Length: 104
Image: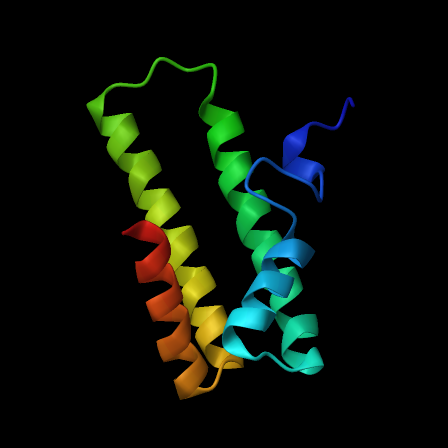
C-alpha cells in the first residue's frame, strides 16, 4: 500500500475499534462513549505512527531521541486528557487499574 501505516486505520498498535471494544468490556462503556473514544484512539495511534515513521530513517542523537520521547509523552498525555473528558470518574479509575495490570 503506497499510503503507508500512518494513514491506515489498521496499525501494529491495533485497530482503534478493537481497542475501544476491549475497553468497553473492561470499563462498561456506553455506545455513546464508544463512538467518542474510537476517533480519539485512532488519532493517537496515527500521531504516534507518524512520529516514528518520520524519524525512522534518521540517525538520532541523544537530543533528537529525547525530543521524540517528549513528543510521544505529549501524545499520550493529550490522549489521556481526551479520554478522561469522556469517561466517568469510576471508569477513569478502572482504566488506570487496567493499564497497571497490563504493564505489570
